[in-house]
Length: 367
Image 1 (cartoon, rainbow, N blue to C red):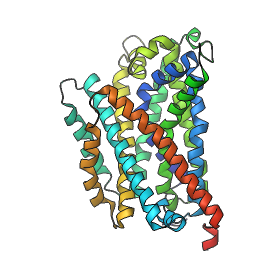
Image 2: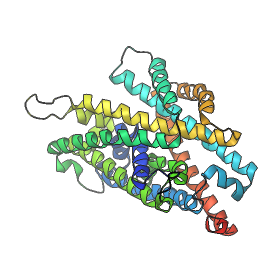
Image 3: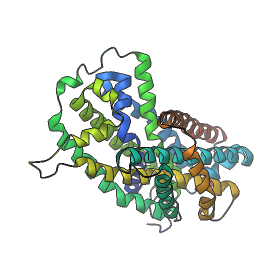
């Protein structure tokens, strides 16, 4: 195999899964319950096909240019000026997304773990850790995700399996929810789909994949894994608490982890295990967002290395994290950012894909 293409399809899938599992895992049962009542698992599952559209367009256009990143081939398709504008928007979006995710992380930490620690200190510590970690090339970036993913997946699966014994099936009926309207169901679908925008990381990995034509396969399997995990988390949480109580909990998944145990005193603090794994998953999510923000800005500036650019992005992301005044604004910013990202990261790859078809540009025409 070509040593210049060291990343396998499974590793790409691991990066996507590791990126997507993040802050949303704590509160997704509440959002889905608000949208679909007892039909929350169905609402959660309905977001996967919507998210798949963005994944498909991104993978489809990247497969046409397997030797280049999206930032490079977009200049040939749209022209340098317009492509750079879109690249700047991508950089700003992921920088803002990293900042808001960082703020959500800080809010949870000071509410649950470090109750006397200043919010800024928690955010700054995590931001420093991520900033040091992204000073690596894309291959090492991939290895970081691959290393942490087993810890995340195995722990989440273990918690779900143990919690299943506490599920009351009556809490999950009717399957379509009580008084669920098309409007509320649609809003829940969009909220669910917005959690999967991490598939956009494919744009960095395709040029280094051993089999770039399998980019869509990696994205599809990753979405399937994440979708199944989210549906199971929502199903277990609703089964334990019921839809009405789930709507009242700020972090239903954490409360579910607190409510389970194994044996008579053998393992009674699943919430401690969950918090540890959650911190790792937050790190990998912010890691990708920060990396995409720095890398896209590097491409716009035509700089050889993203490490210097990442240093300039550091204060910007920190400022973004402090913009919301309170937890209510944090949730509003996060929801709005998710919807904007869902639209932008679907429409832009679609635009590039359509232009490539019209202009008949791609790998075949350049061989």
